[in-house]
Image (cartoon, rainbow, N blue to C red; front, side):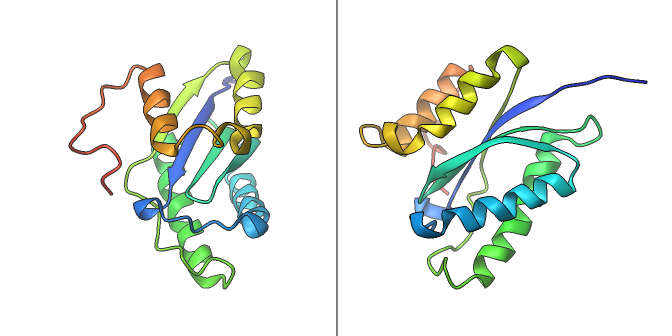
Length: 149
């Protein structure tokens, strides 16, 4: 038997950063995403976000690549959001996303970070947060493409 444990912090942005996820209805989206994650035999540790983006901290089974998971999640949630009258501004997710692996020691830190999304966005824009997230994870940012979708 093989034993694996992979944790991922994934960030999805709405197309053109349109504030399409109304706070009063975000729990509906989060519940839908939670069901999707469970159906993939993955585990959701925390979900949270703002009207223009969502953070997920998940563990995925060894048989499911993060890129495949994100692609299927975006397709499924896009369809659901476009059919749901509570999200009339939703046009889709950006093509890009951020996703990084972490280990068990980082889990509580990431869960806490996602839980405090609303608080730290009082003083930090999404672009600033996203840029810091990429830099912290060693990603070289190509300015001509950064948040251009």
